[in-house]
Image (tube, rainbow, N blue to C red; front, top):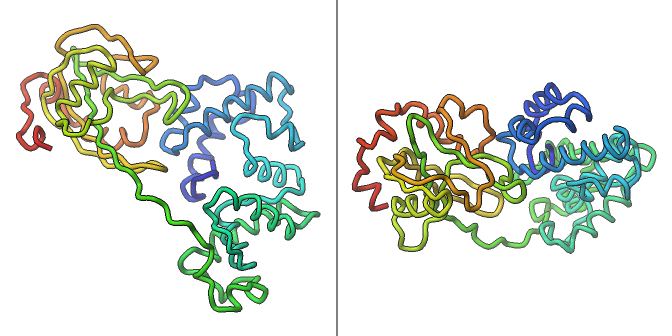
Length: 336
Protein backbone atom coordinates (compact mmCIF):
# COMPACT_ATOMS: atom_id res chain seq x y z
CA UNK A 1 0.00 0.00 0.00
CA UNK A 2 2.89 2.36 0.66
CA UNK A 3 4.16 2.04 -2.87
CA UNK A 4 3.15 5.31 -4.59
CA UNK A 5 0.86 6.37 -1.72
CA UNK A 6 1.53 8.53 1.33
CA UNK A 7 1.49 7.05 4.83
CA UNK A 8 -1.28 9.34 6.10
CA UNK A 9 -3.55 8.06 3.31
CA UNK A 10 -2.62 4.41 3.77
CA UNK A 11 -3.20 3.98 7.52
CA UNK A 12 -7.03 3.67 7.54
CA UNK A 13 -6.93 1.41 4.47
CA UNK A 14 -4.28 -0.76 6.13
CA UNK A 15 -6.42 -1.29 9.25
CA UNK A 16 -9.57 -2.03 7.23
CA UNK A 17 -7.67 -4.44 4.99
CA UNK A 18 -6.22 -6.41 7.91
CA UNK A 19 -9.58 -6.46 9.65
CA UNK A 20 -11.15 -8.04 6.57
CA UNK A 21 -8.17 -10.20 5.51
CA UNK A 22 -6.35 -11.16 8.70
CA UNK A 23 -4.03 -13.73 7.13
CA UNK A 24 -2.79 -15.04 3.80
CA UNK A 25 -5.43 -17.75 3.61
CA UNK A 26 -8.38 -15.37 4.02
CA UNK A 27 -6.93 -13.09 1.34
CA UNK A 28 -6.15 -15.93 -1.05
CA UNK A 29 -9.62 -17.43 -0.78
CA UNK A 30 -11.43 -14.09 -1.15
CA UNK A 31 -13.24 -13.05 -4.31
CA UNK A 32 -11.30 -10.51 -6.39
CA UNK A 33 -14.24 -8.09 -6.17
CA UNK A 34 -14.08 -8.22 -2.36
CA UNK A 35 -10.39 -7.32 -2.47
CA UNK A 36 -10.96 -4.44 -4.88
CA UNK A 37 -13.84 -3.12 -2.76
CA UNK A 38 -11.68 -2.96 0.38
CA UNK A 39 -8.91 -1.31 -1.68
CA UNK A 40 -11.38 1.09 -3.34
CA UNK A 41 -10.14 4.69 -3.36
CA UNK A 42 -6.48 3.84 -2.74
CA UNK A 43 -5.66 3.81 -6.44
CA UNK A 44 -3.13 1.81 -8.47
CA UNK A 45 -5.46 -1.17 -8.39
CA UNK A 46 -2.93 -3.49 -10.02
CA UNK A 47 -1.30 -3.60 -6.58
CA UNK A 48 -4.45 -5.10 -5.07
CA UNK A 49 -4.85 -7.61 -7.89
CA UNK A 50 -1.20 -8.66 -7.64
CA UNK A 51 -1.35 -8.93 -3.85
CA UNK A 52 -4.39 -11.18 -4.19
CA UNK A 53 -2.64 -13.37 -6.78
CA UNK A 54 0.55 -13.51 -4.70
CA UNK A 55 -1.40 -14.68 -1.65
CA UNK A 56 -2.97 -17.47 -3.72
CA UNK A 57 0.44 -18.60 -4.98
CA UNK A 58 1.98 -18.56 -1.49
CA UNK A 59 -0.96 -20.56 -0.12
CA UNK A 60 -1.11 -23.13 -2.92
CA UNK A 61 2.55 -23.57 -3.78
CA UNK A 62 4.29 -22.79 -0.48
CA UNK A 63 1.71 -23.84 2.10
CA UNK A 64 1.32 -20.28 3.28
CA UNK A 65 5.02 -19.66 3.92
CA UNK A 66 6.34 -16.41 2.41
CA UNK A 67 9.72 -16.92 0.70
CA UNK A 68 12.63 -15.09 2.34
CA UNK A 69 15.09 -15.33 -0.57
CA UNK A 70 15.40 -12.63 -3.21
CA UNK A 71 14.92 -14.74 -6.35
CA UNK A 72 11.90 -16.61 -4.98
CA UNK A 73 10.20 -13.58 -3.48
CA UNK A 74 10.91 -11.47 -6.58
CA UNK A 75 8.92 -13.93 -8.73
CA UNK A 76 5.65 -13.18 -6.93
CA UNK A 77 3.14 -11.02 -8.87
CA UNK A 78 3.67 -7.30 -8.36
CA UNK A 79 7.04 -7.66 -6.65
CA UNK A 80 9.74 -5.39 -8.08
CA UNK A 81 13.09 -4.37 -6.63
CA UNK A 82 11.54 -1.84 -4.25
CA UNK A 83 8.95 -4.20 -2.75
CA UNK A 84 11.44 -7.07 -2.57
CA UNK A 85 14.03 -4.99 -0.73
CA UNK A 86 11.46 -3.48 1.62
CA UNK A 87 9.80 -6.75 2.65
CA UNK A 88 12.96 -8.84 2.85
CA UNK A 89 14.84 -6.25 4.91
CA UNK A 90 11.99 -5.26 7.22
CA UNK A 91 10.47 -8.71 7.73
CA UNK A 92 13.54 -10.94 7.45
CA UNK A 93 16.50 -8.57 8.13
CA UNK A 94 18.02 -9.35 4.74
CA UNK A 95 20.71 -6.81 3.66
CA UNK A 96 18.93 -5.13 0.75
CA UNK A 97 18.73 -1.32 0.48
CA UNK A 98 15.29 0.23 -0.04
CA UNK A 99 15.27 3.12 -2.48
CA UNK A 100 12.06 5.15 -2.78
CA UNK A 101 11.59 8.82 -3.63
CA UNK A 102 12.40 9.94 -0.09
CA UNK A 103 15.61 7.90 0.03
CA UNK A 104 16.71 9.22 -3.37
CA UNK A 105 16.32 12.77 -2.10
CA UNK A 106 18.38 12.05 1.01
CA UNK A 107 21.12 10.36 -1.02
CA UNK A 108 21.19 13.11 -3.65
CA UNK A 109 21.74 15.78 -0.99
CA UNK A 110 24.00 13.75 1.25
CA UNK A 111 26.33 12.80 -1.59
CA UNK A 112 25.53 15.68 -4.01
CA UNK A 113 24.57 13.19 -6.69
CA UNK A 114 24.05 14.78 -10.09
CA UNK A 115 22.14 11.84 -11.54
CA UNK A 116 18.50 12.84 -12.25
CA UNK A 117 16.24 11.02 -9.79
CA UNK A 118 13.49 10.58 -12.39
CA UNK A 119 15.72 9.03 -15.05
CA UNK A 120 15.39 5.24 -15.34
CA UNK A 121 19.12 4.71 -15.79
CA UNK A 122 19.75 6.40 -12.44
CA UNK A 123 17.90 3.71 -10.46
CA UNK A 124 20.88 1.36 -10.32
CA UNK A 125 23.23 4.19 -9.30
CA UNK A 126 21.03 5.22 -6.37
CA UNK A 127 20.60 1.59 -5.34
CA UNK A 128 24.37 1.11 -5.27
CA UNK A 129 24.83 4.32 -3.27
CA UNK A 130 22.24 3.18 -0.74
CA UNK A 131 23.96 -0.20 -0.53
CA UNK A 132 27.28 1.35 0.45
CA UNK A 133 25.62 3.06 3.43
CA UNK A 134 23.39 0.16 4.48
CA UNK A 135 23.78 -1.17 8.02
CA UNK A 136 24.33 -4.87 7.34
CA UNK A 137 23.39 -5.85 10.89
CA UNK A 138 20.07 -4.02 11.02
CA UNK A 139 19.06 -3.36 7.41
CA UNK A 140 15.34 -3.11 8.22
CA UNK A 141 15.83 -0.43 10.85
CA UNK A 142 18.28 1.44 8.63
CA UNK A 143 15.91 1.41 5.63
CA UNK A 144 13.01 2.67 7.72
CA UNK A 145 15.22 5.42 9.14
CA UNK A 146 16.27 6.56 5.67
CA UNK A 147 12.67 6.66 4.43
CA UNK A 148 11.53 8.50 7.55
CA UNK A 149 14.40 10.98 7.30
CA UNK A 150 13.33 11.88 3.78
CA UNK A 151 9.64 12.04 4.65
CA UNK A 152 9.73 14.28 7.74
CA UNK A 153 13.14 16.04 7.77
CA UNK A 154 14.76 16.11 4.33
CA UNK A 155 11.63 17.50 2.69
CA UNK A 156 11.54 18.61 -0.96
CA UNK A 157 10.92 22.34 -0.44
CA UNK A 158 11.45 23.14 3.24
CA UNK A 159 14.07 20.71 4.59
CA UNK A 160 14.67 20.87 8.34
CA UNK A 161 18.44 20.92 8.10
CA UNK A 162 18.77 22.49 11.57
CA UNK A 163 17.51 19.29 13.21
CA UNK A 164 18.86 16.78 10.68
CA UNK A 165 20.97 14.09 12.36
CA UNK A 166 23.30 13.84 9.35
CA UNK A 167 23.63 17.55 8.48
CA UNK A 168 27.31 17.59 9.47
CA UNK A 169 28.18 15.06 6.79
CA UNK A 170 25.66 16.29 4.21
CA UNK A 171 27.63 17.73 1.30
CA UNK A 172 24.71 19.74 -0.03
CA UNK A 173 24.09 21.34 3.38
CA UNK A 174 27.76 22.09 3.90
CA UNK A 175 27.90 23.86 0.53
CA UNK A 176 24.62 25.69 1.08
CA UNK A 177 23.02 24.06 -1.98
CA UNK A 178 20.42 21.77 -0.42
CA UNK A 179 17.58 23.02 -2.62
CA UNK A 180 19.66 22.35 -5.75
CA UNK A 181 19.18 18.64 -5.12
CA UNK A 182 17.83 16.25 -6.17
CA UNK A 183 18.20 17.01 -9.86
CA UNK A 184 15.12 16.21 -11.95
CA UNK A 185 14.52 16.09 -15.66
CA UNK A 186 11.66 18.29 -16.81
CA UNK A 187 8.55 16.29 -17.63
CA UNK A 188 6.43 16.99 -20.71
CA UNK A 189 3.03 18.61 -20.05
CA UNK A 190 0.45 16.20 -18.64
CA UNK A 191 -2.11 15.34 -21.34
CA UNK A 192 -5.77 15.97 -20.60
CA UNK A 193 -8.68 14.05 -22.10
CA UNK A 194 -12.38 14.86 -22.33
CA UNK A 195 -14.68 12.01 -21.35
CA UNK A 196 -18.44 11.56 -21.72
CA UNK A 197 -20.22 9.12 -19.41
CA UNK A 198 -23.87 8.13 -19.27
CA UNK A 199 -25.93 6.97 -16.30
CA UNK A 200 -28.52 4.95 -18.23
CA UNK A 201 -31.85 4.46 -16.47
CA UNK A 202 -34.22 1.62 -17.34
CA UNK A 203 -37.23 0.76 -15.16
CA UNK A 204 -35.71 2.50 -12.15
CA UNK A 205 -32.33 0.81 -12.46
CA UNK A 206 -29.01 2.01 -13.88
CA UNK A 207 -26.47 0.20 -16.02
CA UNK A 208 -22.93 -0.39 -14.77
CA UNK A 209 -20.14 -2.26 -16.56
CA UNK A 210 -16.97 -3.96 -15.32
CA UNK A 211 -13.57 -3.28 -16.86
CA UNK A 212 -11.38 -6.16 -17.96
CA UNK A 213 -9.21 -7.58 -15.11
CA UNK A 214 -5.90 -6.21 -16.38
CA UNK A 215 -4.80 -2.68 -17.21
CA UNK A 216 -5.85 0.68 -15.80
CA UNK A 217 -8.58 0.32 -13.14
CA UNK A 218 -8.80 -3.38 -14.02
CA UNK A 219 -11.77 -5.21 -12.50
CA UNK A 220 -13.56 -2.07 -11.32
CA UNK A 221 -17.12 -1.11 -12.22
CA UNK A 222 -18.10 2.13 -13.95
CA UNK A 223 -20.79 3.79 -16.00
CA UNK A 224 -20.42 3.33 -19.77
CA UNK A 225 -18.76 6.06 -21.80
CA UNK A 226 -15.45 7.07 -23.29
CA UNK A 227 -13.30 9.73 -24.93
CA UNK A 228 -14.84 12.66 -26.74
CA UNK A 229 -13.43 12.92 -30.27
CA UNK A 230 -11.96 16.17 -31.53
CA UNK A 231 -14.76 18.50 -32.59
CA UNK A 232 -17.42 16.24 -31.08
CA UNK A 233 -20.02 17.50 -28.62
CA UNK A 234 -20.17 15.75 -25.20
CA UNK A 235 -23.82 14.74 -25.63
CA UNK A 236 -23.13 13.19 -29.04
CA UNK A 237 -20.08 11.41 -27.64
CA UNK A 238 -22.14 9.97 -24.79
CA UNK A 239 -24.74 8.56 -27.21
CA UNK A 240 -22.06 7.20 -29.56
CA UNK A 241 -19.90 5.63 -26.84
CA UNK A 242 -22.82 3.87 -25.18
CA UNK A 243 -23.95 2.47 -28.52
CA UNK A 244 -20.42 1.25 -29.31
CA UNK A 245 -19.67 -0.07 -25.83
CA UNK A 246 -22.94 -1.73 -24.76
CA UNK A 247 -25.09 -1.69 -27.93
CA UNK A 248 -27.89 0.43 -26.47
CA UNK A 249 -29.76 3.34 -28.01
CA UNK A 250 -30.28 6.00 -25.34
CA UNK A 251 -31.65 9.49 -24.94
CA UNK A 252 -29.65 12.06 -22.98
CA UNK A 253 -31.98 13.79 -20.53
CA UNK A 254 -29.66 16.13 -18.61
CA UNK A 255 -26.10 16.71 -17.55
CA UNK A 256 -25.57 15.58 -14.00
CA UNK A 257 -22.03 16.73 -13.28
CA UNK A 258 -18.60 17.66 -14.59
CA UNK A 259 -15.73 15.85 -12.86
CA UNK A 260 -12.03 16.60 -12.99
CA UNK A 261 -9.62 13.86 -11.97
CA UNK A 262 -5.88 13.29 -12.23
CA UNK A 263 -4.19 9.95 -12.80
CA UNK A 264 -0.43 9.34 -12.77
CA UNK A 265 0.27 10.22 -16.39
CA UNK A 266 -2.84 12.08 -17.55
CA UNK A 267 -5.88 14.07 -16.45
CA UNK A 268 -9.53 13.83 -17.41
CA UNK A 269 -12.50 16.17 -17.54
CA UNK A 270 -15.59 13.98 -17.43
CA UNK A 271 -19.09 15.13 -18.35
CA UNK A 272 -21.67 12.86 -16.72
CA UNK A 273 -25.15 12.66 -18.22
CA UNK A 274 -28.41 11.17 -17.01
CA UNK A 275 -29.88 9.11 -19.82
CA UNK A 276 -33.01 7.11 -20.63
CA UNK A 277 -32.91 3.66 -22.22
CA UNK A 278 -34.59 3.69 -25.65
CA UNK A 279 -33.90 0.32 -27.25
CA UNK A 280 -31.47 -2.53 -27.70
CA UNK A 281 -30.06 -5.41 -25.71
CA UNK A 282 -26.74 -5.17 -23.90
CA UNK A 283 -23.85 -6.55 -25.95
CA UNK A 284 -20.46 -5.73 -24.49
CA UNK A 285 -17.58 -4.36 -26.56
CA UNK A 286 -14.73 -3.74 -24.14
CA UNK A 287 -16.28 -4.35 -20.70
CA UNK A 288 -16.42 -7.94 -19.47
CA UNK A 289 -19.60 -7.83 -17.39
CA UNK A 290 -22.64 -5.66 -16.67
CA UNK A 291 -25.41 -5.18 -14.12
CA UNK A 292 -28.66 -3.25 -13.88
CA UNK A 293 -28.74 -2.02 -10.28
CA UNK A 294 -30.63 0.30 -7.95
CA UNK A 295 -28.77 3.45 -6.94
CA UNK A 296 -28.78 2.11 -3.38
CA UNK A 297 -26.55 -0.74 -4.59
CA UNK A 298 -23.71 1.52 -5.74
CA UNK A 299 -21.86 0.96 -2.47
CA UNK A 300 -21.80 -2.80 -3.10
CA UNK A 301 -19.43 -2.48 -6.06
CA UNK A 302 -15.83 -1.20 -6.35
CA UNK A 303 -15.74 1.96 -8.51
CA UNK A 304 -12.90 4.27 -9.59
CA UNK A 305 -12.45 7.41 -7.52
CA UNK A 306 -13.51 9.59 -10.45
CA UNK A 307 -16.96 7.95 -10.36
CA UNK A 308 -17.27 8.50 -6.62
CA UNK A 309 -16.95 12.24 -7.21
CA UNK A 310 -20.47 12.41 -8.64
CA UNK A 311 -22.16 9.71 -6.55
CA UNK A 312 -23.60 12.16 -4.02
CA UNK A 313 -25.18 14.21 -6.80
CA UNK A 314 -26.51 11.09 -8.48
CA UNK A 315 -28.09 9.77 -5.30
CA UNK A 316 -29.90 13.07 -4.80
CA UNK A 317 -31.66 12.73 -8.14
CA UNK A 318 -34.89 10.76 -8.19
CA UNK A 319 -35.87 8.59 -11.10
CA UNK A 320 -38.50 11.16 -11.98
CA UNK A 321 -35.78 13.79 -12.45
CA UNK A 322 -33.04 11.66 -13.95
CA UNK A 323 -33.85 9.00 -16.49
CA UNK A 324 -37.58 9.67 -16.81
CA UNK A 325 -37.11 11.24 -20.22
CA UNK A 326 -38.75 14.45 -19.03
CA UNK A 327 -35.61 16.42 -18.16
CA UNK A 328 -33.96 18.58 -20.80
CA UNK A 329 -30.35 19.06 -21.80
CA UNK A 330 -29.55 22.75 -21.48
CA UNK A 331 -27.99 24.76 -24.29
CA UNK A 332 -24.76 25.07 -22.28
CA UNK A 333 -24.46 21.30 -21.89
CA UNK A 334 -25.02 20.76 -25.62
CA UNK A 335 -22.44 23.34 -26.58
CA UNK A 336 -19.61 22.42 -24.19
